[in-house]
Amino acid sequence: MIPNVVIVAGVPYEVQEKEFVVFEDNANALGVCTYDQALIEVKSTMSEERIEEIFIHELFHAILYEAGFEEHDEDLVNRASKVLYQVLKDNNLTFAGEPP
Image 1 (cartoon, one colour):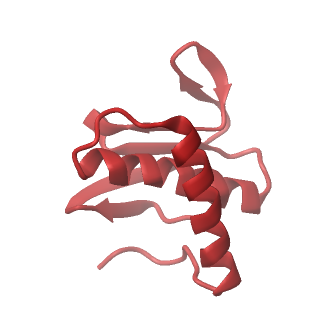
Image 2: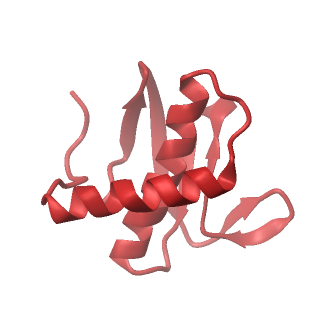
């Protein structure tokens, strides 16, 4: 289960699961991070594991943006977020709960 809010560098990002996620011209994206709205959207019609994986991917975009990187190498984000997701899963770290 992914959180409803995640705080990145002091910025609370709202997290929404939606049936349809639109990114640029792709009306069927799996997820998107909108920095100016501090919003992460993830497609809700996937398996729980895929939802979590896509959430971590979009969270990684938010982390890079809040760290001052405005341009993101999508290959780097894909690879690093997959490894981060697996580390969280293999070490029984959960997504449950809200930030303090």
